[in-house]
Image (cartoon, rainbow, N blue to C red; front, side, top):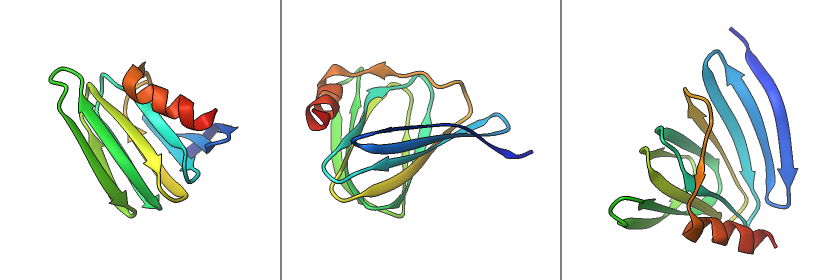
Length: 121
C-alpha cells in the first residue's frame, strides 16, 4: 500500500495537500497566522493532528448549542465527534493533518463559516 497524492489546493489561508493511504483520507493543512479553516461539521468523526503552531479551536455541539473554545499549541491531537461544528483560527502559522476513513463531506455551520469568510476577504 502506497501513500498517494491526489491534489493540492491553495488560497490566501495556505495550502491543503489531499492524500490517500488505502481507504484512509489524509489532508495536510496549512493555516497562515490570522486566517481560519473549518466552519463546518461532518456526519463522521475525524481527528486533527496539530504538528506545529498555535490555534484557537472552537467547537459547538449543533444539537445542544454547547460551545467550547480552547487555545491549542502543537503538537496536539483534536478529536472531533460527528455533528460537531469546528473552527480553527491560526494565532501563528500552523500545520496540521486530518484523517478519516470515509468519503469527505461537510455541512457549513453558518456562525463559524462567516468567520472563515470574513478573515479571507
